Amino acid sequence: MNGIHNVRGDCPEFPAVLERVFAFAASVQQYMEAGLAGHGLSRARATVVWLVYRGGPQTQRALAQAIGVTARNVTALVDGLEESGFVRRVAHPEDRRALLVQLTDQGRAVTAGLAAEYERHSAYLFAGLPDEQVRQFVATMDMVMGRLTQVATAIEGR
Amino acid sequence: MNGIHNVRGDCPEFPAVLERVFAFAASVQQYMEAGLAGHGLSRARATVVWLVYRGGPQTQRALAQAIGVTARNVTALVDGLEESGFVRRVAHPEDRRALLVQLTDQGRAVTAGLAAEYERHSAYLFAGLPDEQVRQFVATMDMVMGRLTQVATAIEGR
DNA sequence: GAACATTGTGTATGCCATTCACTATGTATA
DNA sequence: TATACATAGTGAATGGCATACACAATGTTC
Image (cartoon, rainbow over all chains, first blue to last red; front, side):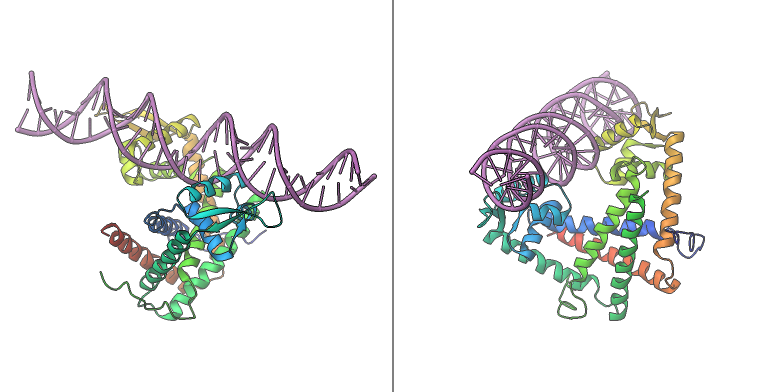
């Protein structure tokens, strides 16, 4: 639990690094949501669509666990997605309680288009940077992400 | 407007970089909101408190412009912050229409504590990394952020 | 003094997310 | 087999964030 100690806090070369990370995260999310909105999706609904796109037809319960929200919430999200024609609820073949969430053709098409769009943007965003720098950037993100969850669980346990 | 072109999309060394950036952003925001929640603040309310902490007493209109939301929304946020004792509304000395949002002693104390906490965590998050790597990480974030706004405005203008 | 702009807020609406209660179904147990 | 328990989905109610529209009070300009 120790290790959370002032190591670089007084170094003048890194003014408020975390603050800039926050700004970066906000910027990224804003960009992401703008792209989604252009295709008629919100962040929350897109998460559902993306999971189904990746993992195939799934139970709402499974989606809730994957996203980390209440089952009730997923019901509402799927309600919206069904109304706007992105997904469909079909009966589970073995469990009569459960429903499988399935992409419609439209849903699949939009998701594929979205993925392609992000792929294009991604290439532009990192264009001109040496491969080594991009690789290290990703590595640093991963490391920070790992430590973030450590800190989060440390806060959890007070 | 060109330049958004497939440059690295087919390079196997960078699988879905943007996807990982999205995950990173989500992780950061989740961490940030957890910290704020520990001090009784939400992201939206914390933004207001932070701006007042940094920029001194301000008009609600100014806050709305700084955050990029409706004036009506700021009214609601300040309502909540006032009720929970973080800020106070005082009359503007020159403009009788306007109200200045001011931190209470409690608000100032909580904000200072929060800043200190994030400072500590920041030191931990990047501990052990060579200064050069951290500097380059920040530089890359800045560059990507700049290009993100370019892409966003490009989307804006269709 | 009249026309216009600005500041804040009431009302209504919508999305995201939660809790609690409930039905229908599945599973295990005595 | 009957009973108890667990699971999947949803109705009802609540709360935060954010918007649009309308409006009163005040400031500014001509």
